[in-house]
Length: 205
Image: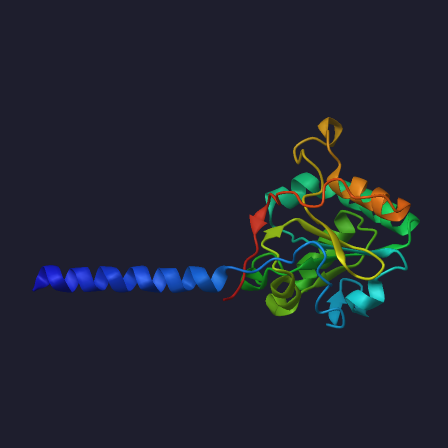
């Protein structure tokens, strides 16, 4: 009887863990999909209320999921302002969103975001994705993670910034930069998807 009880408890635990894992999975946008939640209001570190449609430029929109506490963000962060300069020069809007709702009180609050943006001299909006609503709609799973949309807000690139988080001087493939340049030049984007390396988004559910 005791063995049967242990077996039942063990199976119950497996089912609970499986159900939890299923709630944590998200379906990512595919190349060619339209940007969702474009009118969802978010607050950035300057106190402005923004929407993705409002941030988008005439040539497109770059959405980056980022945060304050991930070491992978710290590795790639020295390339953020370069992307901001490139997108601005090409009339593409750029915004970074922080979806780490589960640990807001452990380094991911708006005040923490303000300090991060000031310290790193962010030259782009850094906004709080409250309850990870936009991250869920995009199917984002990591920080950092890039989604590049064209002028019709159709996804044309998704993935990593480049191929070397540890050393910007040793980068061989500048995925996001190449996608931006190819987008604005009207040529085919050679690499449309890459693997996003980073910390998992800390969701509350």
